Image (tube, rainbow, N blue to C red; front, side, top):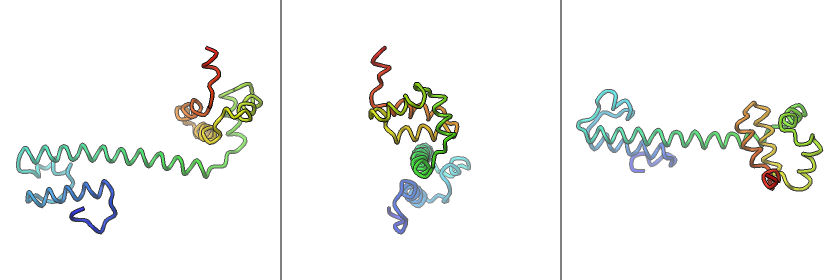
Length: 149
């Protein structure tokens, strides 16, 4: 980075460096790029288009960071949570696989990825049915019901 060398490298810091350079080279007031668009802090169409592209890129980088943060947070939370009997029982009631014995059989036969099953039960206990279903779909090593169809 050219202007903020003491900062840790992140995409946001790098983009701030680029915007700072843009304002310096074009003798413009330093402010948020979106604010620059709103108040007309640009001299010509070329500046306007740069700021517009910059804001679009900023939004994509921001969304990427949010998505990465959610994945990281889910992984950290999942490792810390201890499942209680009620959460497991409620999961089994909704995803009945010949009762608990059927599930135990699948686990003992090595047909279920335990960590993914754990994530499914945790998602279910938090009421996140969509995420739970995704984990349920992914936790089986062999999907024997698809082979029968």
